[in-house]
Length: 313
Ligand SMILES: [Zn+2]
Ligand SMILES: [Zn+2]
Image (cartoon, rainbow, N blue to C red; front, side, top):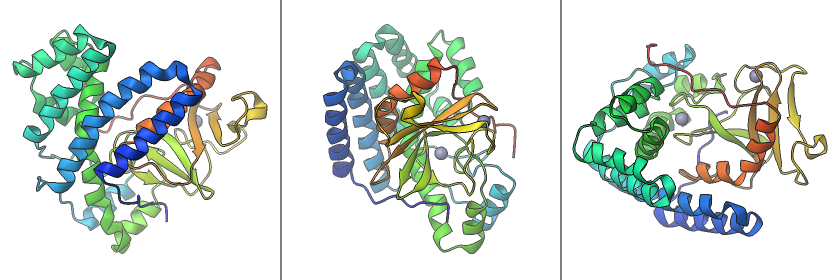
């Protein structure tokens, strides 16, 4: 069963776990203090919004399990190409707040400009959030350029602000897989290294009880692949290597590894955990393993760009 249900989480449990993990990270990596401080400021509003969405009666996407199963069988993520009504009025305040937090946290004027463009509706929040949910980097780059805004920052604030809704959608769409045979089978047969819900790549693999669970960097979906190979290109041969500490990839710790692929020159991080991270704490797992990114990047490996599903139906 490659679909791994997350333990239920609440606003309080998410914040408590995040706080504990930031403190632990700060203790071993005091040099990460500024990054941790900024992540605290950004994750807070995302947790609050997640709570609002979970307790609200917001429009949800309803796709019949049979339709979804057929789509997944074609290798297309569930949300790709679907017209999805967004609760913009609920998401926009968080979007603006994230701009403020980024401005205060070091991005300065570049983030202020984004907030001003949204405030004055020169840039439409609904279009921006829709493009982010569709994982349409090109649309966001074009929109940012039109308004003279920093594209990476626009991408970041939009992604953070819409991610609680993406998480709620994936929960709604895939929870029936536990009882619907066709959808369950389609998810079990999913062979993509990209998220079957939204199409994003995993941020990390969380290895729990020997199960390598991929964690979507956007919607936090948790899934396993039948084979053990490169999540990006599928390589399972000798060109796919899990680098252990004695390979000098990472010093000292055996509970964290880098999977490197010499077929596509990409890498993915894997970390042993006792419990999977709740949404939106996959971002913490990413920050906690930043030294693995450095090790892989130094050796010439990278993470590939998002796959583009915007023209596929
Ligand atoms: Zn996803
Ligand atoms: Zn590969």
